[in-house]
Amino acid sequence: MTKPIYLSFVILIIILSGCSGKREINDLAIVMAVGIDKIEDPTEGNSEDKGYEVTIEVARPADSRGQTGAPSGGTGDPIWSASSQGETLFEAIRHLASFSTRRVFWAHNYIIVINEDVAREGIKDVIDFFTRNPELRMRTWVAITPNKAKNVISTVTGLEVIPGEALDKLYRYTDISGASPRTELLDVQSAYLSETTQPVIARVRLIERGVSNKKVGQAGAYKQVELEGAGVFKGDKLVGILDRDDSKAAVLFIEKVRSQIVVLSCPKNPEEVLTAEIVHDRFDVTPAYKNGKPSFTVNFKAFVNVVEAGCPFTIEDEEDVRTIEKELERTVKGNIEKLLTKAQKEYKSDFLELGQRFNNKFPSEWKTIKKSWNSTFSDVEFTVNVDAKVKGGVLLYSPTHSGK
Image 1: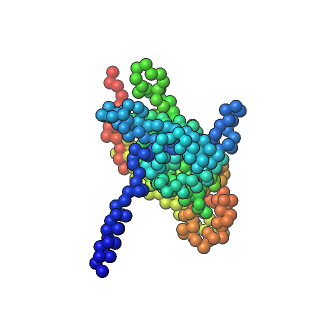
Image 2: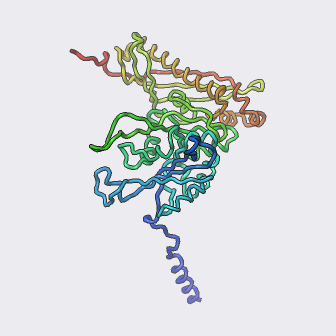
Image 3: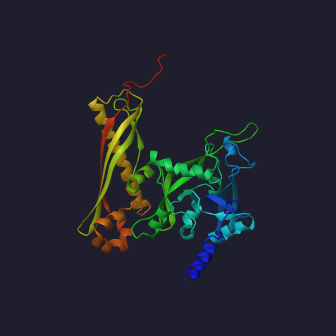
C-alpha cells in the first residue's frame, strides 16, 4: 500500500515542478501604453472606414534608467514604439508579430488612448477587444485625444522616462485639480453596458509650451501632454467635448472631488481677482417622482479656503467673506446648470449617472420609464442649490506689491 502512494508522490513532484508554461521577461514586449487611430488614405488625404492603426509603446528595461542619469547597461532609447494596421484591432495587433522579436505582453499596460475620429465612429470594438483580453487589467486608464494617439503615447514629457508612466501619474494626481474624470476601462464598459448611464472619457492633448529639455544642437521643444476636459458618448459614439469648467462640474456627479479651484472677482475691486480652493464638499443628487414625471434636486455644500488674493482681504471682514461666498455660489451653480443643459439639450446623453440614481431610489417607477429614458431625460427638471462657506483665508491682509 505504501509503495503505490510513494510512487504517486514521486510522479506528482515531477509533474508539479515542471516549467513548461514559463515566460521569460527577455521574451516579452512589455506594453506600457497603446494608441488607436484610423487608417488614413495617403492619396486622398481623408480617413475612411478602412480599419485601425494600433501603436504600442514597449519598455526597454535595460535603457529606461540611463535616461535619468542612473547607471544603465543599455545604449538605446527607454521605449520602442511600433505601429501596425488591420481591418480589426485583433488583426492589427497580430500583425505586430511580423516584426516584433518578442511576444506582446499587456499586463503592465497603463493606458489606452483613442483618437477622436475613431471615437466618433464608435468604440464598441475597442471595448470588446480589451475587455476580452485576459492579460489586460480592467483598471487600465482610458483617454480620447484630438491628436494622433500614436503621437500622444510616444511623447516624452521631460519628467518621466516612459510616456505611459507619465500618463499614469497624470491620472493619479488629477484629483488635485478635479479638471478631468479618472476613467478606467471598467468604467467605460460598465457605462456602455448600462441601461441608465452613458460613457464619459477623460481627454488628453498635446500642447506646445515652448520649453525645451533637449541637448545643444537638437532642434525643437518637448511637447507636453495635458489631461483636461472629457468626451461625452451616446452609446459607443463620441457626441461632444466638455471644456475645463464643464468637466469640473461633471466630476462632481461621478467622482469624489479632492480639490477644485475657482477664480473670483475681489469684493471691493472687480478688476482684481482672488482664488478660492474647494477643500471639502458634500454633493448630493436627490431624485423625485411626481405626477408621472421624474425630477432631481442637486445640493452642493462647499467649504473653501481663499488661497490667493490680489486685493486686500481678511477672514475677519464678514461683509467681504459673505460677498465671496455669494459670488462662489453663483459661479458654481452657473457651471452646474450649464452642464445639465448641455447634457439634456445638446448631447441628449445621461453621462452623469442620473438614471442610475433614480433607479436606485425608485426601482418600480424606473421600469415604466427606462425604455424611454433617452427622450425623457431631455425634459427632466432640475433644482440646483449651492451653499459655500469660507473656512480659511490668506494670512496677509494686503496683496503682495513691490515697495519700490
